[in-house]
Amino acid sequence: MNHPTPKRSPWTTYFLQGILFVILGYIQAILAMTPFKEQPSSNLSFDFYTDVFWAVGITSILYLLLLLLIQRINQQLIQLILHGLLVALLWFWIDWGIFEDREAGWSTYTTKESLYATAGYSLWWVLGGCGLFLLGSWGIQQALKNKISL
Image 1 (cartoon, one colour):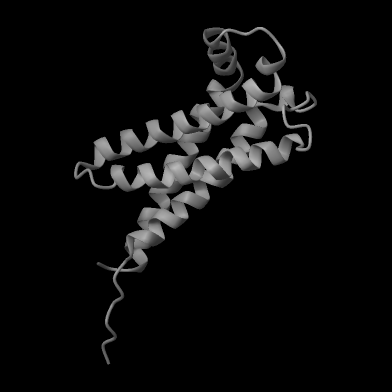
Image 2: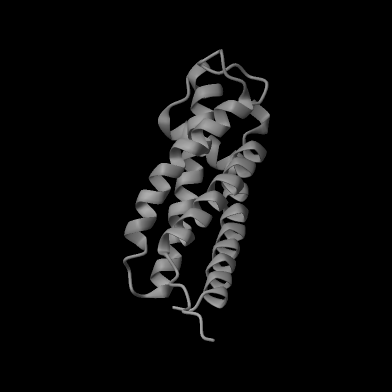
């Protein structure tokens, strides 16, 4: 008795990649911005972990919208490169926002100094996390491809 093979929905891939983005982004931001954990936020009602959670959660919506555009590219290599750049830039943006909120907002940093300082704290965490993200994303795609045939 042959059962019809279910079609793979691209939404499953988007959902799983979004979850991966949130989990690794949260870990990356906490590790990169730990030096500012004890400094006050501009919104004094939130603690460090809540600030990071909301920054990653809100940015994940932008990630998913941009992922829809990236997935329309037919060449896999260009798609992979753009996906990695997107993740790295969004995670750096999250780190920069946390730095601006907890350090630069209470001091006299210029935008350029703020960007350089954020890069100094988070560049290796962003790049390492991005590598893990791309491996995890590839694993998700391979698992779905092997489990469900098109």
